[in-house]
Every structure is written in structure tokens, then in C-alpha cells.
Length: 123
Image 1 (cartoon, rainbow, N blue to C red):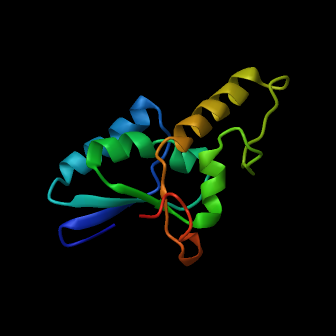
Image 2: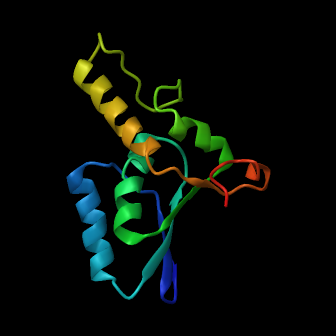
């Protein structure tokens, strides 16, 4: 979304090279818009794992609700997911989920919440 020459990217999508490239190509086609924020709507890896790469490429600030912060900062925690699989059931899916969760934990987001003032991510 944008207003004039500034904009926000809502969710970063997956962190794999192809997914990130699609978003960067789109942003390149709309180069008149400066992306200021990457707004993560919730912690699911399909919404967050590309945030680090997009932040580095655009210089945008990553923001999310304070209640989502704990799920992103600790990729090994028990975070609710739409897709859960044990290693025994499907090792490849479990490894992919962990890889995307690890990617999502890297951007060190800023929590946009009045109650998050004590968070180390709020300047």
C-alpha cells in the first residue's frame, strides 16, 4: 500500500530466493514508491520469513504487534501454526517449517504497540 511516494509492504512472504525476488522485482517496477515499513500481520512463516531479506534490500523498518514478537524471536518455541508436522510424519516438511521460522526470527522487528515500550525492539 502507498500514499504518494511512500509505502508499506504488508507481510513479507516466504524467505526463499524465488519468493523474495518476486517481491523485489515488483518493488523495482514501482521504484517511485519508497517502502518505509514491512508490516507483519502475524507470525506464520509464510507471512514473515522473507522480512530480513526485504528489509536489507529496501531499508524498510519491520513492524508487528507486540503479542507476535515472542513467536518470531524464538523460532524453537511452540508457536501456533496452520501447518504442524512432526519429523516422524514428514521430515522434509518439518525441516522446511523450521527453516522458515528461523528466517522469520532474523529481522529483529520493532513492535508497534503502546504496551511494548519496554521491548528492546522499540527505539
